[in-house]
Length: 357
Image (cartoon, rainbow, N blue to C red; front, side, top):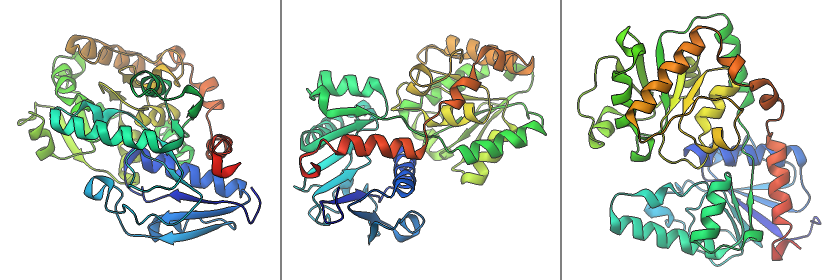
């Protein structure tokens, strides 16, 4: 793109929203390293954007949460640009050329039929409006093609980077400390996280019988109650929502991380734990089945017995010093994508969009 070429707007309002934050942060970091030619507009909160603005980018401030009013609080207020890049499928209504990242299809799992239908219609409108589509897992791409009739040539699978600095800090601290006999589960307390089965499975493990604990980070006791978990069994503790320092502390002390999700767009906590040399037991989320190192113990998330068996297997491997003999982390870690490689993939896909040619 020439300096006087098309203007690209990055919807960078996703400052505190899980996977969308990771994707947005990594993309902006990578673009800053590349400093691509052209006019780049970064639309988002000042506190988030100011750390990423590069020489060829201009900050367009907004305090609006991207999920307000089901993502439509900014409808028809999107700054003018030749192409708008949305890092999440929830995007405001506008008629500008757009590229969208469909991180996952979890919204289609809502237990309420009317809400599920509304979310499906919204997603279909977002997909139809996009000139370019991204996702971070081949399974999501396959569903978009099969169920949403997306042109296979219009959707690219991007490799999502992991915060290497955070993982390195956790790895260093774990070398000089001993696990504190608890399993760690990280994520919002939503139905697809499968916490009811995870908690039941934990209570029947040998690890729990000898005093091991299960720490749940990412939600509140009230949210668990709404999922049907009114009373926590012995050994189960809610850590609520942790900041980055608190999450690193929890990772340092964990015997293993457990991810019991029924469905995930990626499964970022799994990749973060593996990079930090925290043993993992998981359902076959993309971070394991598609992008993970070989050998990670996996279970059937719909089987309480399977979850419990693999938890005990993983604890045994970790405590006997055999986990990393089974899981080939070294080669996997050496080939991990970086923010720069993510940005390069996005730029290559954007180059196919009409306004960017």
